[in-house]
Length: 92
Image (cartoon, rainbow, N blue to C red; front, side, top):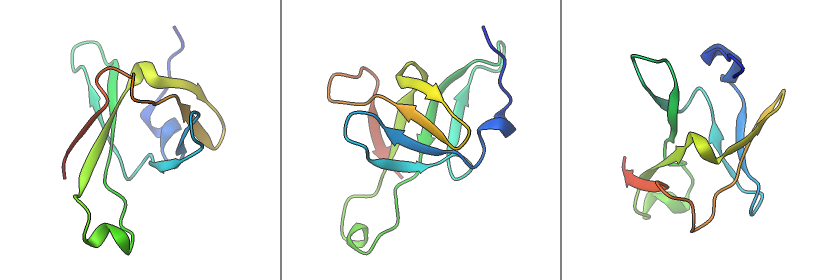
């Protein structure tokens, strides 16, 4: 298992492989981490502030770590579709 530092993830943009959507940037996100093992369970991306989101239901997106497919120099590629277990949108 490769060790990665949280600081190595900061500033990377999260991109969905399924539809190419830009989901957010690590640094603006939180992570759910097991305090005993140090393993990342999920990435919590805040709702995106756009003109249209002023009226939309503001929800955070919780992306399970299992959905992370590749971590590059500038982006993190995740694979999210309706079949991903634990993909949750929660009130922000």
